[in-house]
Image (tube, rainbow, N blue to C red; front, top):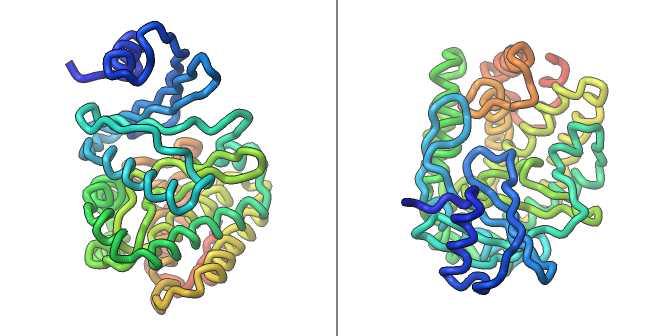
Amino acid sequence: MPLNIEAPDELLHYLRSTGRVGPADAPRMTALHGGVSNRTVLVEHEDGSAWVLKQALPRLRVEVEWFSDLARTQREAAGLRWLSRMMPGAVPDYVFEDPAEHLLAMSAVPQPHVNWKEHLLAGGLEQGHVAEFARLLARIHRLGNDHIEEVATTFANRNSLESLRLEPYYLYTASVVAPAAPFLKALTAETRALRIGLTHGDYSPKNVLLHRDRLILLDHEVMHFGDPSLDVGFALSHLLSKAHFVAAQRGEFAAAALLFWREYRRDNQTSADERLETRAARHTLACVLARAAGRSPLEYMNLDQRRHQVDAVLPLILDPPATPEELVPRFCERL
């Protein structure tokens, strides 16, 4: 039977039998909930150290059927190793992986920490954190450019891009929002064709922990060699969706989205990609729509709010802004 790390007895037997812990060790194990693509368990050792174990699920935990290749754990492990080497302290430390069990272990971020997405939804928007979020992404992309041959080889596999982004976000949304279909299908084709830089693929506040007022980035299973502007659009879509949802702070979230774009662009001046602005704007529109109508809609919005988000963004998809600078105010005006 395949290992289920959410079953404490199974996990303890696995850790002991593989020598990850001693035969008499009895670590404390706590299932962590909130993600849809993995089983995740906190393992706290008696010496005070702690790991987080992630095990890929073949069917993601969402209402609509959504499947993905279990080998994405190996891609996440490669991403974690690369980022740990290039950006120590910005991500958890790699501990071990077990490809046969689709399992990855990393160091646990020490307490106290808070998930940044939850912090934002609770009113904890701080522009300094947004600026750091932008600079962190710019740094990832710059380092990718500095080691272009290495990342082109290490992250050549793009299965997760297909199964975790293009199909569930763009193509599924195209199938249920017919007016947006030509835009989304064209963007999908362009994204499939581009192989120009290191792309995180899941650059979102939900994958960030705040620890000692610093951002720690998690979840790298969609890392690939592709179009880095996808990361910009993915991040901006979350800030704009929160501008919609947290109406009392709409102006602050709009300002945060503009700050994110400006800080990212300033810190990524080495990029010679002249079309990055246009593609970033298009990915932002597509992701804002997908988070309301795709396979994985934002769980904090109800059905009426999701419909309103579709209504707000659809006219912009039919008449796309050329840059994020233009997109942000136009979207917020329509809210």
